Image (cartoon, rainbow, N blue to C red; front, side):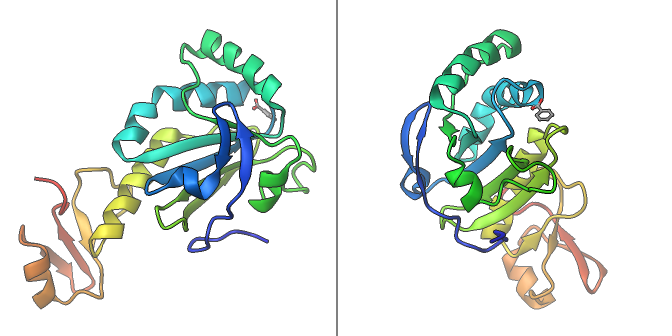
Length: 212
Ligand code: BEZ
């Protein structure tokens, strides 16, 4: 079954490079990013895992836990992590799930048989503290992901979870945001004390409300 935005992210228990993970308990009241890798000892994945290790501080700042998954065994993950450190200059500082039996990959529909019937595609799931799926992204195996974009989207998800705003094209943290149509101009005056500009009745912009 395909997981879509708003679904509860399936719970599971799995072994990882940082011990057993009971997924929902592990998330706790944080946000989480679960992302899959087609296979251990593959070049694109090696670069991705190094990049995420370097960005760990950015995820921590946003109270987001990251966890990778690959359909290989823990012993391979451990050998591979030495290569990641050697070639990418960053030590794996988040768990990598042993999914050699493809249990989690199946739960999350990470194997797309028309692409490859054994390896996972590059899936990304952003999950909220309520354990609901907030974002899904799927890349093919041969295309590495952009984790700066994933951080950008998390900034938007966390902002729009707390304020009645939406973020426009190419928005980044600090840019003006859009007031959602459900908010009247009268309500907007009190909800957005920094003021707002009405470009069209349906297009009103205001400074990012959680910034000084
Ligand atoms: C990689 O991670 O480098 C990769 C995996 C499968 C197909 C192509 C590239």
